[in-house]
Image 1: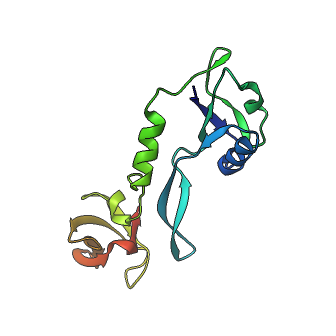
Image 2: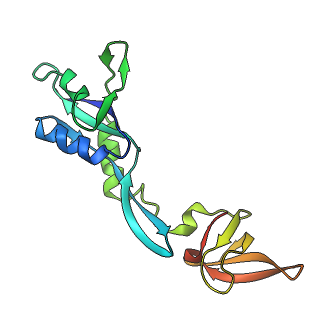
Length: 166
């Protein structure tokens, strides 16, 4: 019977560790999510690990040894209790896979991370680099932000993509 174990990886080596575990005959599962990032005035959707520096290895302990996992390229160690690896409870992996397949972990809309009352920074347009308070979510991509202009709070309707948390 296959049991799943949490594997702690080296920094930014989740994909490398997963590929090497698969090459050695172990099962590997690296839960991922899609996130919306902006860098150098560009916005794009990237796929990132759901749990940075962690993935899951599946093996049948009666047939396969677990110790070689620790020396796999990209792996820092296993989550252990004493000298034995700690198995992930049944159902967790299947629940993660199911939720990942429907996109439940994706953070694609910038507005999803914003809440009313939060301070936000405008990243593009005429009000670029100004900080204001989010006061209204109009629809999927429009928001109202109170900006301080000439000593007065002025409401400005902007796209949610033009904002980031301040």
